[in-house]
Amino acid sequence: MYNTSFFKKILLISTVVLLYSCDKDFNAIGDDLIGDDHFGLESEKYDVLAYNQEVTPIQSNSLTVNALGIYDNPVLGTTTANYATQVALTAYAPSIGESPVIQSVVLSVPYYSHVTATNADGSSTYALDSIYGAPEGKLKLSVYESGVQMRASYFNGGNQFAQLYNTDMDTPTSDAEYINFDAKKVGSRLNTGGVLENDQFFFDAKQITDVTTTDGKEVSTKVAPEMRLNLDNAFFQSKILSAPAAKLATADVFQEYFRGLYFQVERSGSDPSNMALMDFTKGKITIKYKAKTDITTDGETLEDRTLVINLTGSTAGLLKDAKSSDYATAIQNPNSAGDERLFLKGGQGSLAVLELNGLAAKLEEIRANKWLVNEANLVFYIDTLQMAKTADGSTDIKKMAKEPKRVYLYDLDNNLPIVDYATDGSTSITTDPRMTKVIYGGIVNVNSTTKRGSYYKIRLTNHIRNIIKDATAKNVRLGLVAIDDISITASNKLKLKNSVISEAPRSTVMTPVGTVLYGGNSSSTIPTGKKLQLEIYYTKPN
Image 1 (tube, helix red, strand yellow):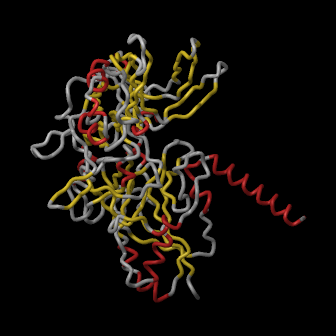
Image 2 (cartoon, rainbow, N blue to C red; image 1 turned 30 degrees about the vertical axis):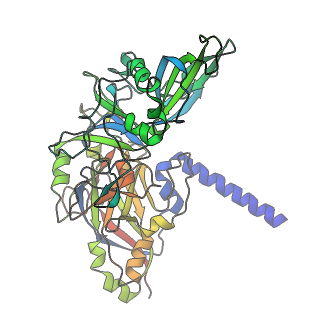
């Protein structure tokens, strides 16, 4: 009993110390857990061939999150993100009622947010998450009926294939067969609310209070921040409430009849813009109307009714990029001898390709001497001067480019995670569930003085061990991308394949941010100690 109690106390104290140290700065979480005490081990460093690769238009259907807005990145350029989605009735063959008259049509999509304070009156103050650009940026937002029938699959030559929707599918093209959501939008925009819902729309962090009347009493309900747009009553009166019953009877008929919505953004005059990541699948259109009751004796009794249309089905994230000149030059003209700077950007952006050529040249020596690998790391140092740029030349940290929380290193030849990722079962010890795989790493390490990123560190110990142990194992090329969610490892297909890449990780398609890292080139412009190298700690037999 005494021993059990003693060990419980030790475990409790250790846990408290661990949580306290990690809570101080989640950005250094990987280092806190593993440490860098390599006493008694011998370190060897090897050159890494690393070069840029452009991610051309890429598959973007059915992403778990999508961007909407315009993000002006002072380092990498401007990204404009539109969105298209199918819609679905919550229940088909609904009973509309006789002589329906719409009272309101409201589109709502929740924002990612968190509570920062609870006020004395019981209300809450929120802050929005996943906002990029000016905090109070404005947009000209237009929501249209989509003219594109989005299908999950198609047949060709008797075979069925998944239908792919790419990031460039609202860009003019000479290909008559290529889908263009912009060209096929139908009619006028549907959002008919005030100026703050269209020409000067902004992502509002205020809590919403809904007031309803039940049994003659008003009831208030608090709702977390969300997009709220009043849509055109006349359109939905005609399209939904006055539709032939057969058009609302089944999912396939309805999706042909009402093909979905297309969200399009433009600049709002000279106002700064911004962008949000959103889960549109949680969105809905709520139609409130009055109709004669189904069972009525006088034919005049009206009742309040509600019909809900969900924003679910096939989707497409649609991106346009106006790249900065330095960025465009770097990714469109990669150096076969290795680039001095590695540009990582999500969306329709770029990644880095790594070849462990220095290690390859030493494999026979390592095997012959039977060196044992204790740890292997790649440390990617951020070009902090580049990432400190602002559009107006100021040193205001709020005007600097937002940095990726993580980077992801994977087997590029096979588009699969490396073994160190797969075997890392560590969970997040912060409130952010995306901060798992802390041993594998890739989490940005933030400088305590500048409050900006300084480097990313990834452990690939088991990957290196496998290469050394098995002489038949291929020393595959590795890919490095900017990501937001480490749990997503699937890949999306590029519209235009090349000899280097045909796919890219889905997680990078979903993030609009990027960073600039120092490469493995032996250039004098790379500061001392920040060149990309593979570092391995060995135990060397006597």
